[in-house]
Length: 412
Image (cartoon, rainbow, N blue to C red; front, side):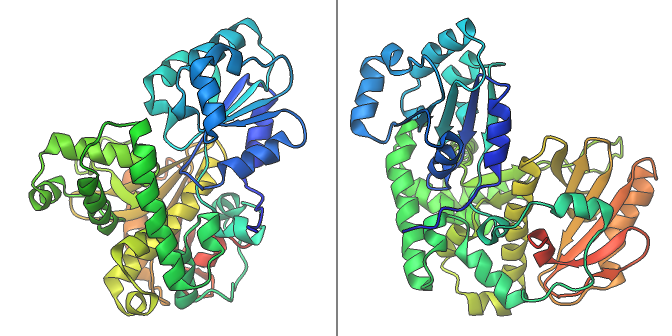
């Protein structure tokens, strides 16, 4: 039996349900939406999964009767399978402003389904559920961002060297895969999972006939994780046009397999890059699709850097999602001055994070962040700069500049 992890977003959903008529939770299939829904629902309310063929048949044949909800909370799992339910829900919540009526979940980005985004605009709160973080697996509280802005960390965090972090990245965050200790068996699960969602779930959101092309593209996109993607190189290698490629990429993004981190553009500085940075959303699937093994990655600087940066992204993005007061960006200018991640707080304070796979940090690793604080922010906003690395010591490198073990992302 799989462990029932307590999801960080559970409390967020419960809080929102007290003031909103409907909440929609979106996340990749098997990322834990059903578990979260049951944690929110408890012993009361009505849980209906559209993965159940009988329930789906009922929903398609009689959408008005299916969504009738006189009291309590109704959970409708995998709502994208029956989008005709949405107009019926709209009519109900328009007539009754009681909070906590519906919790909707979907394995695709619900906002990309026109009938949903149009019908429930202003009536529903959207929440993202990502695969498990290390903190959730360990039962820790999500305190990293508040501590980072305050520079409140212990002098040493042990137990997580580079080899251990790579192992965590290979595990990924899907609950069923996390429970598999054998590397080969876990890889088989990841590949089977990918095959299943591309063959089964794809038809719910897109009319893509060439699934073989999508499979090939998945591997190519995984190899671009933590990079600025060159579309022209991909179109040439796959012999497809840019319009088709964009459509396929957007489909995989809507299924939460990949994500773009936008550039920070709040400046008139003419050399700021405008491109988004591309990431796989689960490092376990990423490593399995690419056919990597931990020992080889440990010795390969390029691969370990790419993997660990993607792993840090998955941990950091989950933390940013929890509170509306944070936004995640990246920075790169046309002279290749780069900061892997920028977290902007609602008051304008900035947190920069540079990721290093190795065990050593020097003052040169802080040069882009110091330049950014002095030349872009010009002391108009508070700036804290971090370099997270696979060592175990917290080291001060000047005012508001700190080298920090990667494990600080999940330790309390």
